[in-house]
Length: 273
Image 1 (tube, rainbow, N blue to C red):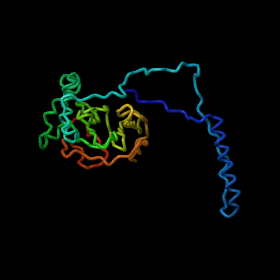
Image 2: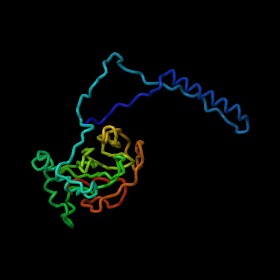
Image 3: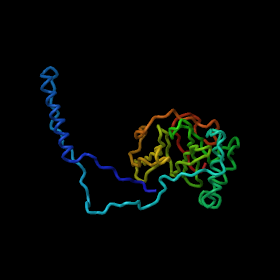
């Protein structure tokens, strides 16, 4: 899917923004006079004039439909998976991944990610064999705002360094996939009603940061932010979500090598292990 999305221009016109700047200067000046010398206020200099964006090619006919169908709001019922009592925690994450592999044999058993299909036999085993299971720990949080937990899971697409991230909710006792994305993932976080994925960039010192947020009208997780940022150890704050949510809860059983902490973030392990 396309990496970049254009930024939205300011909604204030150029005269309005200049007028706003002039009012701000006048108010600051009035405040300084009213205070006298007691506070020893000093002017900060002239306020720079705000400049609105310049619109290019005004005669260009605006597009009315997207150039590519990238499935922004594709959702689907997961066939073959039951949700006992409507409780998503009773759904086996490994069974969900098995169902996806079965549904797409051209991608897995007979395709690019055949190693993922083979390693599914290691899921549920103990010791070194169990650590080869490509399914990562499942996490639970109410991302849709309906008061019930939703399921966020990931699994390695092997061979290679891709990680698939999926979000599922429950509708009328049926498991519904509301988000699907694959990338070379360096970190995943849950914040509010959002899923944040960080991925390496081909530009040294930078990384991609993508944020999906639940949209109640579309009833899907929409890609609301897609940006390239300078990489670093500082934890990135999410863009505001419509509402806050309780802290994330991990699955009781952890088939993968991801830490068993109940943190709201997890990172993908190195490929090929």
